[in-house]
Length: 102
Image (cartoon, rainbow, N blue to C red; front, side, top):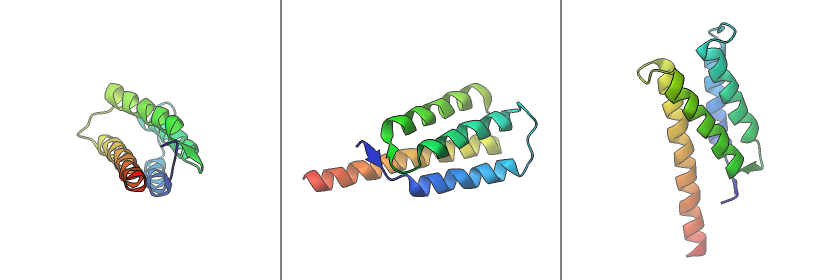
């Protein structure tokens, strides 16, 4: 499970970046920091993406989310969607690996 295709996940994160960026966040605001985490995720999901690097970037996002974002806000919804889609990509990869090794 070393290299995983994150193309659709990456595209979703890029769309969230555009959405947040269009609000013109203030320097060092929660939105500004969130954009930094999301841009890092986009960078590490460029093919060939290594699962370990992506996991580290997503874990960092989760820590930031837990410490700084209210889950009932739009930013909270974005973070939860990203995490859910990340987990979905991993589950799909596990299914594929199980089918090919079975």
